[in-house]
Amino acid sequence: MDRSKIKKLDAEYIVHTYNRYDVVADHAYRATITDVNGKEFIDLCSGYGANSLGYGHKAWLDAVKAQLDQVQHTSNLYYTAPGPQLAEKLATRSGLCKVWFANSGGEANEAAIKVARKYGNTLADHKKNTIISLKKSFHGRTLATVTATGLAEAQESFGPLVPGFVHAEVDDAAELEKLVKQYDPCAFLMELVQGEGGVHALEQSFVDKAAELCEKNDILFIDDEVQVGIGRSGTLFAFEQYGIKPDIVSFAKGIGAGLPIGGIICGPKTCDVLVPGDHGSTFGMNPVACAGANVVLDTIDDAFLSAVKVKSRFIREELASMKKVTGLDGLGLMIGIDLEGMTGAEATARLLEEGVLTIPAGDRLRLLPPLTISLEETCKALAAIRRVLD
Image (cartoon, one colour):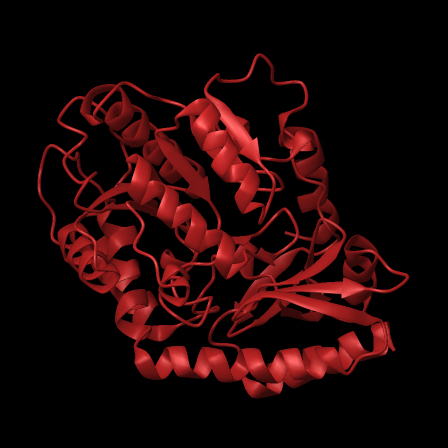
């Protein structure tokens, strides 16, 4: 089907919740997408970080195809092998206990909120149910996760919002402590590296204070790693670099490598909060998605993570030498770029013309390349960025 026909069908029959760029993808390999007219693009957004292994990863494709030939889906009333195998890997490598599976980051954070509310309402030493999240945060598109999100533009027109959420200033430990005294929360919900809010890595001292407040006041620490998790930070989970142990970790995007999967990993205080009938997801723990995710975790070993760190250092060093770059933020291959005289949206539009796909985050330019991006693709993309920024 040609470009004009695809775009016409999209315009007529798709509810437009996205402003699309003028790229009609036809096929892809590694970190390169080819559109229907044969033009190539180096993909530095990888489906908002979802295509962690890039395109055409053979072991992942083999596992997904093999599972499709066995059982593509069945009810969670029955057992299949890939889900429990994946849960064991996630629990073991995170140092936590048990996993609940969903289909997306929003669903994962919704589940985390429900666990926190039930814990605070029934299991804490006294009833409490307020959740403190951060300004400039993003936690999903469900009504509860939109309320938890600290971006006004994501909440407009959807009131009344869900009660019981309070937003703290980013990296303001004094205000966080004040809000704890005022609201007696059941949980903190934080992205250790904020995504939509501008790719900002939280300050270590702020995270340390948050963990301390959790310990002293029986507050659950919910770590939203939907975008930064599963190797993107240079460790499997970003919380490893902060030296904390959350009570709940939400994950999605990169673990699916292109298929929809998400979930939460629960620690000792939270792993038995939900019981049969409390929550569910028809496609949660889908065996095909889990079969692919098992390959993702098997691939992301110590050597792979070392390579992510090397790529991150190289890209950041190159970016820092470019004229319009005034600052860099984020962790690993989740990179936020401050630009002089140019917004992230403007840079994204100009880079599209140069054959490089990026996405803005606030005023910043955001890079979320596949973790498997090759040196050749990296250098080609950096050359295009330099042409635009210099």
